[in-house]
Image (cartoon, rainbow, N blue to C red; front, side, top):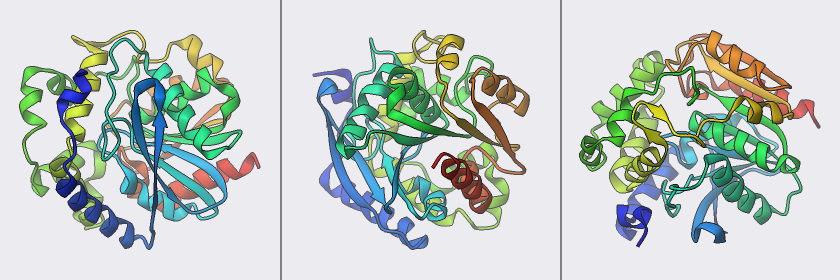
Length: 315
């Protein structure tokens, strides 16, 4: 049994409760999703992909705490695109994998390459968020012909960004207890407030999001699997080699890239991300005033418009 398999699996009853929470959140935005399971032979796992809409294929890779309807406000703004929402390994119904011994770019290229192959699409656009940004860049670096354009949403792991205390605690022995505790709605709201979403919380715009997020943490072992990933890549107070892209790897990504960063996102600063995008040969930074880490939740119309304009520019 691998370390990932030993972490735990989703029970049928718990998974159905979680799917119900998903359907409720999708319905708030007038959306329905179709579910596919994609085989990844190299890791002997199946990855869930939710599909919404039709048109040019866009693959979405979430950050920590994200599965399917995590993207709902942005998907609502992207009618005319075939939105393919990947649950990273171990999240929601996706099988976990053992990250040990594998660089993240290689994992990204393998898993997302399998998703692309299942679409029979020669190229895809990729939208990442937080750590999902590294997945999109990893696919582009390892399989450049597979990717057309890349959107990065919110800050993420990088050498100039201090490792969040949450991740250090998650990797510690205390983390094993934390990921098994059922989070309340109040505790979940406190986490969301800490990443820059206070105004949206106070305005009630995240009420259904919070209900879904509580279900995700209670009904699935997603955070336990995220802990296993963090443990594989975090060594003490620094990320291990193979997790953060090098300057040379960033320079190899010649695709058009747009990064959107909320000015209330505590993951780095605008100046840091200006230096980051400068390492990418064909990238730009779009600052979203007043938005937090999940930038599309605070201003979906503004973010959706920027993303649409960027993706359609390459048509």
